[in-house]
Structure formats: structure tokens, C-alpha cells
Image (cartoon, rainbow, N blue to C red; front, side):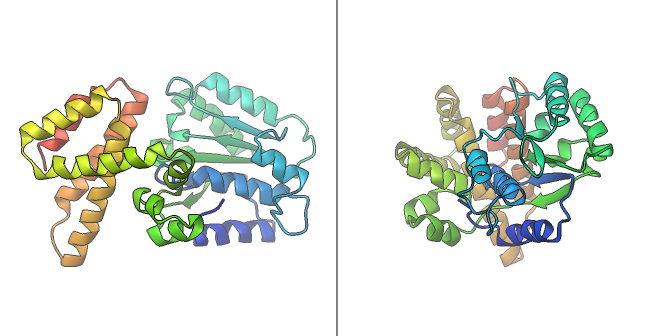
Amino acid sequence: MLIGHGEQQKKLRLLAQKGKIPHALLFSGPEKVGKRTFALWFLKMINCEGKSRPCGTCRSCNEIEMKIHPDILEVFPEKGEIRLGQIEGVIEKAGYRRVRACFKAVIVDNAHLTNIQAQNALLKTLEEPSEDTVIILISEYPHLLLPTVLSRVFEVRFSFVPEEEIKKALEHRKTAELSLGRPGAAIDCLHFPEKVKEVEETGKELKAFLDKDMAFRFSVIKKVVQEEREEEFLNSWLRLMREKMIDNIRKGENTACCCGIIKEIEEILLLRVKTNINMKIAMEKIATKI
């Protein structure tokens, strides 16, 4: 299901209609805003066997949806990293003759976790693209990719989706409110009702956290870390700071503090995946700056 991102959808459809399919694309933007969903939708569209593309009912569309299409290859991080062997393996497979698709495709999810050696191997393929192969990189942190890689991809940027668009698509106000502009998070709440309570509690916890003194903040951080809820807490905090920054801009007030905290939260979320960062200390450091 596509939710929001009308301009991005229009841009991708136009590329397909004109037959100007880039050999490599980068879908960038925050977590759970729909990047991977749109990547699969795009691959359905350029490989669809029906008249109205993507039809969603032909063999190709169904196999892509079920993740069993023989010509669609995916790479995911293993233990927080995408390694050289993974990229070399998928590049080799991409070189095989197509089974039946118009375009073979390679999706590299969380591409920012691709190590330098693997990025250099990928770069060779980007420099000498195959006419019938499309590579799609998906990343929350595209700035971590090599400049030479970025220079060879067509970037499609995704952002947060307005609450009303999520509500209209899912016909559920509560999940739209709790999603923080992330359709994927809203869908998670629909599929897993227990998530609704978790997100609501995190929101209340964060409000109390920001309203009280440093000792209370540190106690909340300790509890969040012990319960391994850092990601949800930090994402809620990040969204709140972005809203505060927009509000400050409207009022003509200084946004330096908000920008600094947003940057630090984003860095912690990334380091949490890539390293063994001490989350308690990192979160406490930010808490002292509010």
C-alpha cells in the first residue's frame, strides 16, 4: 500500500512511462516512511505483465509482493554491516540471464551500513551498468555513502507523511496520530495492537521526561535502556524536536538548540546500529542540553 509521497510517485511513474529508467536509484529518508514499499512498487511497475502498470495481479507483481521473484535480489545487513562478500555475491547473480523480468533488480536495504570495501565493489558495477539491471539503494543516512557512489545514483527523497494522509489511507485516526508521520509505524500499530499502548506510553513518558528535573530524566533513561526501548524513545524524541523546530521557525525564534539535539539523536540512532555505543551515557548527554 502506497501512503503519501505523491510527488515521488509521479516522478517514478514518469521515468517508467518515458522509458528513462535510471540504472541506479537511491531512496533516502527517515525510517518507516515508505522507501522500501515504493522501491518494490517501482519494480512492479517496470516489470508488470498487465495493461495498467503495476496491475498488482499478474505473476510478476505477485512474485515481487511475495518476495519470491527470481530476478529480484535483495541484500540486508548482517550483524550491523553489509560486507564485501554479500555485494560480490549479488553482483554475480545479477549478471546471470534474466528468467522473465524486463529488468533484473538489486535492492540494497540500509545501504549506509555497506562497508567501504563493499561500496567500492558496488561502485564498479555503477560505473559499468548493465542495460537490463536496476540497482536500488535504500538509506536513512545517505551521507555515509561514498561521494563517488552518490554521484552515480538518481536520488528520490522521502520525508514524513502528513497525519491526515495516513488517516485517510488507513481509516484509523489513532494509528495516524501515533505514527509520527511514518506510514510503516502506523501499519505496525494496526497489525500489532499492543504497539499502540507501547507508543502511547512512550509519548507520556517523554512528556514527563522533558518537563521534570535532571535526576528524573536520568531515571527515565536508565529504565528505557534496561527495557531495550531506546529506538522507540529516541524516535519519539526526534519527532518532537522537529515539531518544536518548525514551531520556532514560524515564530521567528532561534532554532540552533533544536537543530543540535536533532543531529545528536540521529547520530545516536545510527551508532546504535553500527557500534556498541553506551546508550545510557549518550542519551544522558543529550538530556543535559535541554
